[in-house]
Image (cartoon, rainbow over all chains, first blue to last red):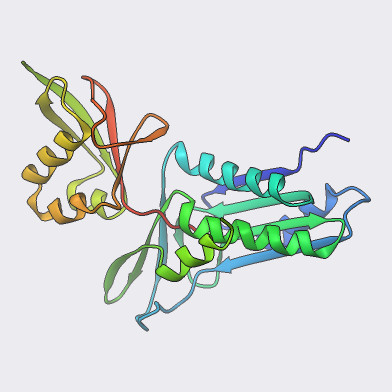
Length: 156
Length: 85
């Protein structure tokens, strides 16, 4: 059976994780016994406690999509999955809306859990976005934290 | 030696400090490091942000080292650290 298992998409408008899950489920074959999904949402408060009105994710015209493709493909190759998907939003995101959604399916649960975890760790440090929190107190550019880099390093 | 225009695109914090795109006149045969330096001199408020070792340079589809030679008409992009999710 051909193994075309990964998809990655950059979207610039609000999207529904529920619809994404329905579409993901519809393309699974009978060999998938486990599906793991993760949704990352925009928060209303920064780590320092400041109010956030909008999270803004600037993207690159070519390299952002390429980075998403690369991460999804790497997960598909590394784990024994039947399908993986990444949907990542760019632009202005109000609190409560979905920034990123990943899904992984596999015959048994472990590979799906690991593939979803792996994709998120790589997205946090390697997806080509520049992230800014805009609030009443001003704007701040956000960079990956030491913890993000440590999480990423677990997979090396 | 004559001046050659190099287009520079900037993202994230750097785009805010300098603008999303500027054209610099640099000496022919200059390197990415020379572009970085010229930019720092022209936009001094951005000089510490530009000199950070975590700011990577990109030409075409690739991240390039600072000793990469830049030819006239090429676009050099500077990336502050990226973060998705």
